[in-house]
Image (tube, rainbow, N blue to C red; front, side):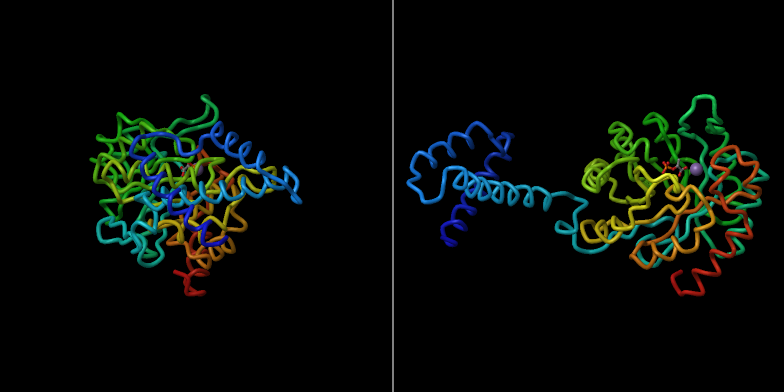
Length: 336
Ligand code: PEP
Ligand code: MN
């Protein structure tokens, strides 16, 4: 019986490849019902028809899963396709080799604000500064960001301290322009399935930091990354930033399990955003430790000179003292 089931599986795989070439769907429910009806018509017991249907349905299902596995093997972002870790190069920073820290304000507000943070980061030996210039805000009445002006401030200040810039772009038409100012294009959670934006980011050489969608499954996240990589840009960093659940004591629920799963399934570097996941700052140290212990390639955190007056995400941004405490804790635990 076992041999026959495996022989059948081999045939199923061959048919799967043919269907793939023809562009036909693998699963044909009408044909499956016909087959089950035929099988049951030959059933003389003692198993009753429902049991027979169930048994054969399981064999069909396992075969279909085999075809799906083959399909996933083909994903460019999959580790099955590319076993070695992808190292994303941002200047002389190599994301994916040893843990990195990306820090900076939620939004770029003024040159002075960015300068204060940049100086603090440089003093800690940090090379990557983040800051939002195009802000995807829930309410249209909230601060929308400084736009290109914000990118220019980031570039100017970053160059002053020898830092690299990470900033979010929300419009496919702005991707090309953004490459003049930023070193890493961030695609935010709300745009994880903005396929035109993903395609546009796939067409440039600038590294892309892709955040997991608000309620995206790991599979959807990987397919979103595949959009970018399949267009020719393999410099993609994945960021787990929490997903929406019923829990209200945190802004989102950090899916720590996604970290080892993503590392196992994909060769792309994986970071954890400890600010947008928690939405609070009092637990920054333990969650950063947990993320790195789980195998994350780095941390993203929001830092503002005076979080209480920040124009966005005031509750979750660390001030520079708190950021220094976080760095001391991570270095002390030899996680960074
Ligand atoms: C951000 O990092 O600035 C941001 C808006 O985060 P997210 O897209 O994860 O909500
Ligand atoms: Mn923010």
